[in-house]
Length: 113
Image (cartoon, rainbow, N blue to C red; front, side, top):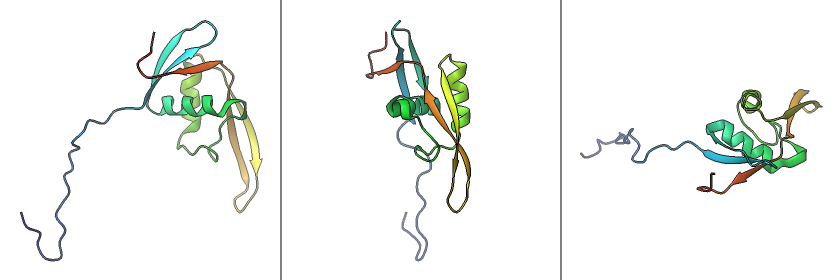
């Protein structure tokens, strides 16, 4: 179909590839228990593992629902500390820093036990 002058043709709204959720498999050290995490919880866990003892804040690792992600991670049995920090600037206030205390490693894709 030809485009009408001044009107752009519509793009297809149906994706041509399947949307895959972000998934990771974590291993709790030292006992070796593994668990698969999906979606935003998986994304948040990866951020926490990579941040180490410095932890994550919504400022350093932007994400819309950090409190929800950490709530769900805690519900799975992982230990996550919340440290409340003040910040200045044009819009002073406070934010949370989330620190993972459970010793966890992320397994390479396909190596779940």
